[in-house]
Picture 1: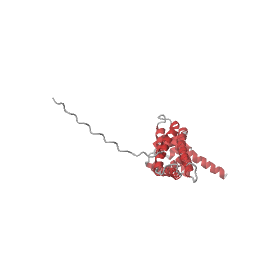
Picture 2: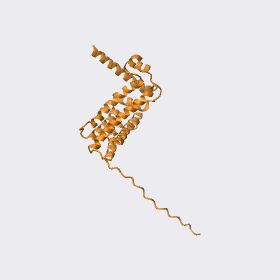
Picture 3: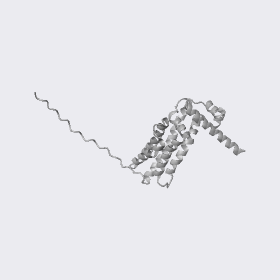
Picture 4: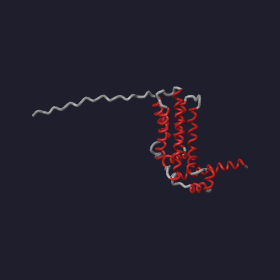
Length: 226
């Protein structure tokens, strides 16, 4: 009986998160009310407060359902003794993009996070949680690149922090632009080549910028003598 009650409570929680995702996507986070989410979930507002402190907490739970599996993939690259952490990071990065391209649920969540989330009103608390989630993900990626450098898969000249910032910007930028206009390019088709361009750049020897040679001064034209 207790087990059934726990399962029912978990099912209700998931139903509420599903409803929040739907309402957030339709109205935006700032304009969505808990009453609307409760109506979509077929429950009371009190049921929402039983599972979540506020709208920000509900948004956080919605994001966790998609972010945690991604972080699990990245964590494999930071495990002690991981074989070829660079290959693991590369595959994880490609998988995030390709999974987004084929998963409509994931697309909706990223569309909400990138295009339908205004940090105003009762959604102001979402901003801090969004930042915390980004920093946590960035830390995992940085640890992965640090392992790559320590094990000789990347040159010592590479900064793990800068490599992580670049990789995260690549992924978030591609996803944000693609969910805005999926017809602009094929994310699934180009994911691997776009990631490889970035990773090959990290492995290459940096090109030293050279000062352009000064151009010779133009010859003064001689005035014709009449």
